[in-house]
Length: 174
Image (cartoon, rainbow, N blue to C red):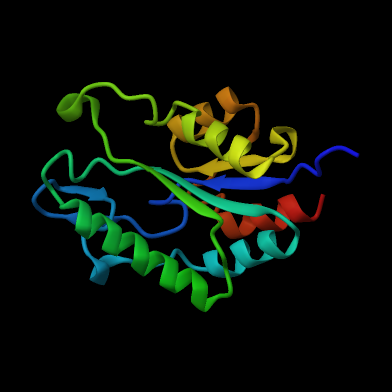
């Protein structure tokens, strides 16, 4: 009898699951730098719960270079992560594991784990016996899509018009 391979969805974090925050020091929308700025995008908790209830393992795969850039400490990045997890838990969502690349090529040099590298997806595949043909990578940037393609999973680019909530409904109705 063979191993029962699992299906999974890999999510980018900022702009996909939670709101990006406008910071005046960079004049740009970015990852939340502190716990007070963490807010799920509307309907995300419900969408993830629907995926979970449909048998998907849920993962976060995100580039988080703010410590490398000197904008945050690693402890602040972990606090932001924990705040996000607490908000998802309120909706009954369990994230199987979160994978973060804390590097940035301009500050720390090249690494193996920064998206679009499929490094973390392949690590999850080995660790959790995942069937990549039954998986998705969902994100809001082309690097997320390239990461998923390089790992051999289906991909979905979300934006304001194609939100995760709308995408969840379409994916689960097929």
